[in-house]
Length: 114
Image 1 (cartoon, helix red, strand yellow):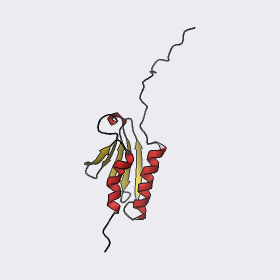
Image 2 (tube, helix red, strand yellow):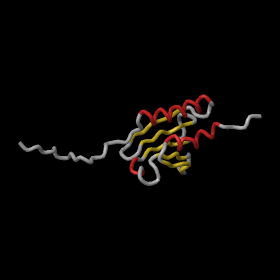
Image 3 (tube, one colour):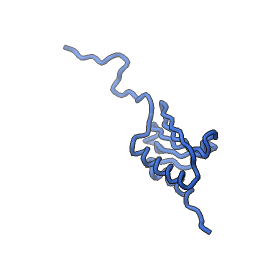
Image 4 (cartoon, one colour):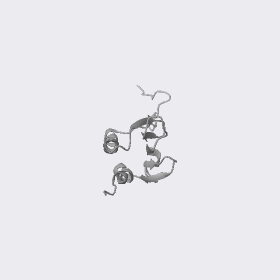
């Protein structure tokens, strides 16, 4: 008996959407919790699209995101699949390791004490 693969199915099919895994969300939410405790951030949104997963951070609910943390698996072998973008869309940090990329936002917590 011959086995045939169903039409429309291939071994190298890309997933329908990109999402953050549990470890990645844990790292992001740890940083988010610290920033909420410091009074810097108030709300967040998660978008899982076909080519990118985005964690958006807001100061208030009805604003543009202050920062966007993106995961683009297609860039895994090039510049790195993780990036932090500012409010104007400028890439603040890009890399292969999420914790290293998130350090650019942790520096915002460090302030001079008078």
